[in-house]
Length: 636
Image 1 (cartoon, rainbow, N blue to C red):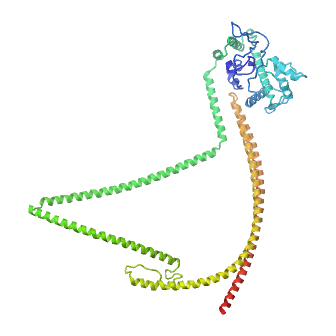
Image 2: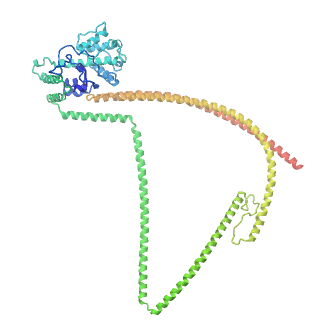
Image 3: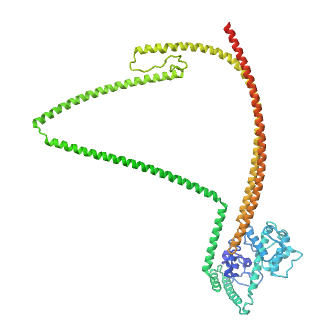
């Protein structure tokens, strides 16, 4: 409640319904609802000293910073409207406030928010006449020079901002309607202030009777007049903020009306909880809860599978540990038995050692024999090692030679199997055994035997193969001539196939064009669905704030949501029916195209089979001619 926060350049805008007027003219019980109606943000002023008093110009004196001289309203300087009239949210809020005021006061005629977006001059005159008649019931709208009379009447009422004559010619224009709307909102606040002053009867409240309601009005009027005089005195002394006076005034009002702070706090907490619940429900309605639950179910199923795998791994690890423990216990038992056996053997040897009887000469002889035997053993060990090393080297050389022989034999056998020479029952073996078998008694006799068994038959086979190759080469030449004739026929048929493929390609292009048309239609319907969905979301978000009517607004929003949802479902059904008809047409078209392509394919197959049969007949004739030529050549 400070003048610095409002940043006005004159006291005159106090007629506009801002937070300060709403607070001082409302009881504490209605203060919350009054503050929740309209929140008008005001920009900060560049200079706080350029301020014009409500009662006249400001003069600089030596005794007081400000002087109050009763004179005309406002100073000579032009005042700029600090309200954000070109801000769309603020304009929509003002339009809604105007519509609510007209409906509450019984405006004759239908008036909606949509009509107030850009009203005509006739509608504006009706609204102005209705609001002004609330101040003066005998008021009648003048019939001439309305564009001059309406700004003059607003100036007479004390409207602090200029309203041009040209704005009266085109009231609903985008550049003039915000200023006119601001004037109407100011006039509505004036009506509200006039009504409250009239009900409270401030001028004659001290001469009323002693009823309880009038007594409450007297106490409130006294508090209000004390607060006004004190703040005005502070203002004339140069003060810009009145926080201490505001707190003191609020405390007196609370004591006067017995305001329960705990009840207000509980109601505010309840309102906050309800707001959070509404926001949560809106968010849940916008999200797909079934999809979220499915995702959560899938995550839980994955976690369950991981836990089962981990459990199976633990069980297998436990089984391994049990097996290892049983093996270790068995080894431990065997080691214990072995220790017992060694102890028994040690006791036996100790007993023998204790009971044996040898002389020193016997012991010396035994030691000498033992040394000689040890030297003999060492000599024989070295000889054995040398013999084993030599044998090892010979075995390595033999193994290398054997590996090379086996590699050659494997290569020979691989080539022989490739040529179908082994085993003896192979196609080209002719009953001969061409396999070389490795034996330990390998010598010169074996080499001669393999030459007789393998080398001579191979030479005979090579000679026979060469003769067969020459015959096949001659036959190949004759067949190449026949093949050239067949290729020429195939080239002709290939040209026919190319023509058929070109026809098929054209049909494919027509089919693709049809599919593209269908896709464009689907995109169009999808964009329509998106626009309708956006429209539905915009309608869902239009839930106004307010403590007193939060429940009614929620119900109204839910009803509006169901209505929009029903309309959207109807539009979706209409779109689905249209899409069904489009898809049915496209399907029938594709069916016709497929039938046509199948007919073309059958015709092509039939032509191809006929041409193939003709070629086979011609090829058969050529083969008969070749056989007749061969028969004649053999006869000659």
